[in-house]
Image 1 (cartoon, each protein chain N blue to C red):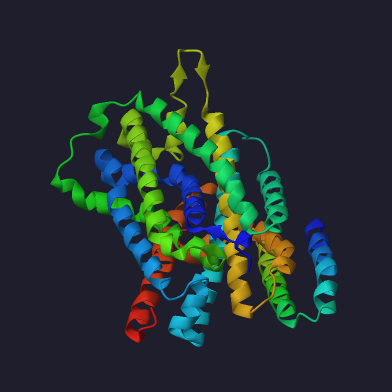
Image 2 (cartoon, each protein chain N blue to C red; image 1 turned 180 degrees about the horizontal axis):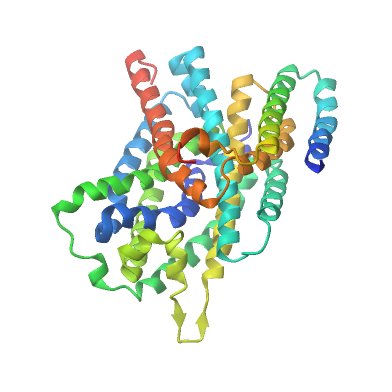
Amino acid sequence: MQQSDKITAKQAFLLFFTLGFSPSVRLFPAVAAKNAKQAGWLTPIISFLLLFLLINIIQSLYKNNECKSLQEIMLNVTGKIIGRFLIVINIVYCMILNAAYVRFYAERLTSSIYHSINIEVFIVIMLIICAFVLYSGIVVITRMNQILLPFIGIMFMSITLLILGKLEVKNILPISYLDIIPIAKGSIGITAICSYATIVFYFGDKIKGTDKIKKSGINVAIISFIFLVLMILATIGALGHNVVAKFPYPFFAATRLISLFETVERIESILVALWIMADFIIIIIFAYVTLKLIKTLFNLSSIKPLIPLYFYFQYIMCQFIAINRIELDSFSEKILQPLNCIIFIGIPLIVYIIGKIRRVV
Amino acid sequence: MILLIIFLLIIIFELPSIIKQKQYRELMAFLLLAVLTLIVGVTHEFNPDLSLVSFFIKEY
C-alpha cells in the first residue's frame, strides 16, 4: 500500500478529538453536575487516567502488529472463533451507536433551533452527504477533519471563555474529600466517550507510524482534558449544578447567556454549526468503522458496494432506535454509556491480557 | 412505499455489478445487510410504537 493512502497516528487522534466533541457538549456538563454537583468540573480526571491506560494498551497491541487493524489483531491474538465473535459484537454495537448519533444529531437540531421542521429532513440530508463522502475513503475524511478541527477548536474555546466571564465561584466550590465518590460516578459518562480512542484503530491498517501512538495520543488527550475541564467549569460555574443537571443541553443554555458589549447576542447558532460539523465526522467515522469490521468478518475486497445499503439501513434504524428524545437520552445514559466502556475499553484490555499470556503482544 | 422503492432501487443498482464480478463474499454480506434492513424496516412499519429502547429498558 502507498504511504499516501495512509494517515498518521496524530491525524487518527485528531479524529478522536472530533468524535468526542459532539457527545461531550451534549452530555458531560449534565452528567458531571448530576453526580458530582459543584465538584463536577473535576470528573474528567479519572476518565483521562483511564484514557492514558487505554492508549498504553493500544500502543502495546501495535508493538508487534504494525499495519494491522485492531480487529485483525483480535483475530491474531484470540484465534478465529473468539476473534470473529468479538468482531460481530463490535459490528452490532457500532451499528446501534451510529443510528443513535444520527438520531441525536437530528433531535438536537429540532429541539434547539428548527422546532417545526420534520426530523426526517435532517436525517436524509446528513446520510446522503455522508454516503457520498464515504466513497472518497478515510484519507479524504481525515484531511477534511483537519480542516474542520481548527474552526471547531477556536470557536468552541472562544464560546467557553466568554461563558467563563459569567462564572460565580460559589457554584464551583467548596470541594472536599467527600466528593471523591460522586466524582468517580460522574466520570463513567466521560470515560464512555474517552473510550472512542479505540474506534480509530479499527482502521489501524490505514495508520502509519504506529510507534508514535502513545506520544500523539497523550498530546491530544491533554488538549482534550483542558477543553473539557474548562467547558464543565464554565457551564456549572455560570448556571449552577442544580440548573445544569435539569437542562437537556446545558452548554447550549449557557451559550445563550453570552452578550458581547450588549450588542452581539444569540451566538448559540455558532455552536449548532460546530455541532453539525462534528456530527458529520462522527456519523461518517462510525459508518466507516462498521463497514471495515464487516469487511474483515467476510474477508471482502471493498466496502463500496455496501455503502448505499448501509446508509439506507441507518435511516430506518435511527427511527427504530427510540420513539422520542426522552427515550433516546435514557438509552444513552443507561445502556450506551456502560456498553461503550465494556466494548471499547474492556475488549482491548481482554485482548491485551490474552496476548500477554500467549506472548503474541 | 417510497422507502420500499428506494430499497429496491439500491438492490437493482448494486446487485448486478456484484454478481458480474463474481464477488460472492460481497454478495453474502450485501444480502445479509438487506435482510437485516428488511426485518428492522418491516418491524418499524407495522409497529411504530415499538423501539429498540423498549427491548432494553422495561419502563418503555
